[in-house]
Length: 236
Length: 361
Image 1 (cartoon, rainbow over the protein chains, first blue to last red):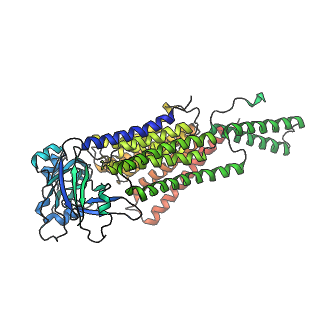
Image 2: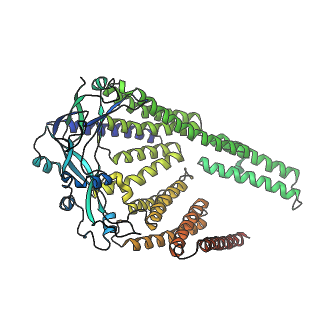
Image 3: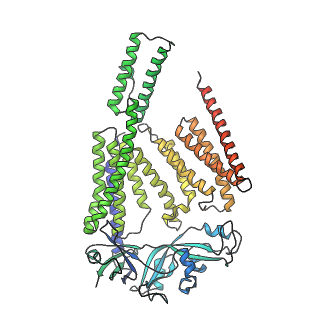
């Protein structure tokens, strides 16, 4: 059997994959944006890798992120929102008490959950320096419209797709099942899209900025699929 | 030359026939030298003529290796072609990243979408010009690299959330090129992409993020079993060297997650206690790897039996570690491992001897 027809199929696959990606970008940008927000160098790092000409912005936010951050930030009441009740609302099975036998195995095998997280532009954490981010994760839900109804301010709150993980704090591994701390279920945000491409002509304004403490502001728009794009950028 | 018989349809089959013919010719001449029998001059001339003619015909049809030195060079060519393809991929990606920031968005998208199309065309051109497919293989790798870069860049330009569907597209693309030109490396790339894509899809459907697919080792193992079974369903008369690729990828994708689960390194989603899962996976790994050895021997698939033996040995040592590491002195534990290795050698030698007896007329 001839296999000549497979070459047009391979080319067709390239065309189809590109068309679908462009269609998704168009769907995101079509109609009323979900949010439009102005951020500065406090909330965005300017990324200009060596040997690359592209310019990226990396989102800086505070909240329950990596496990060590969860522990360090345990004293900050602003991180308490990702508690057991919230984790259950996100679909985690938190029915096993943290001190029950087998709890470690149970929480260890819970897979991460896909959800949406609200990031609110507010004040920096108490005691933080002037350069600290003012963007904080404040809430999560399985559906983005639920979050938007709770945070209707589209110029201060953005909603992003995220992944939340759960862990059992205060319990050791298999060899040391007990530790001094009271066992506690902790949730943390294990994934949040963070890199934002800066297209021309905005990249031309940001590229020449100094590597050390660049000052700039960027206006971002978030579309129907909660994917951002740059609509303005300025540097003093 | 009617005695040459039907010519093989695939290059792999042609190579095997050429190897058999060369071995037959060498052995017949050697037996004659040892006085086992005597060939008349006419018989010897006809034999040499037949072998030479058939090899020439096979070489003309499939560009196969007709001598040992050619075979050794072919391996070098294959390795150079693969490394060259990978290096060219890196060059294309780095070149684009060096300059893409100076381009407008439409130009960026047009260039990255056109690159894999051009590479596909170049692969087809090279395959028509050269039957050994070294350049076609190299260019197919570049085409796959360009297509990966294409979707990554389009995703980056529009800040699209990463999706497992890209794996489906990359895997499909590699498999299409593999079947079009008979490229094994492309088949490996394509099946590996799909082995990750299927569990990722399931993971996504169940409310998780697809890129945490390692949290579903059972799904990866099941997909591996499916890939192993492909040659039972899809026959490859023209591409005789494709079934071993499916079996190798399938076995690796099956046994690695099962062994990780057996060692407690991968969290299982089975509603069982951790200890039960580990014991179950250990048992499965031991039984199925032994089954793979048996299957390899029955089907004369050397590669399957070798891979099965390797996984069986790993599973066996894991079992021994669990049973004895904590309470045996270390020197005794390693003495036990050595004893088991000796026992394995004895068992395999017996199997080999039985095979020799079976081979006697």
